[in-house]
Length: 110
Image (tube, rainbow, N blue to C red):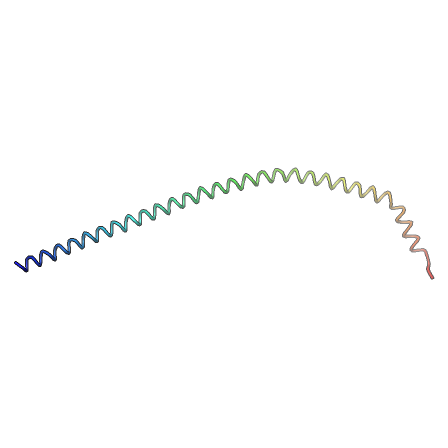
């Protein structure tokens, strides 16, 4: 009888060990499933954030490029005005410059 009881105790211990192993395996599976779910949620949040940042970037790019066209036009007009002024100034003083250069070239110093 004692051997039977000892055998029964071992069987109970083996059954308890198997049950514990099943519980541990279930917990590991649940943990892995939760980690996978958390990873998928994080990836989704990252994708949403990236899309939001891209939209914001494209909006700012569109705003600045619109201003850029106006700035280019304004700079072209300012440049044209400055070029015209320089041409007028050069035409106005060119005779004086030529006379001054000729005077210095033709004057002989001792």
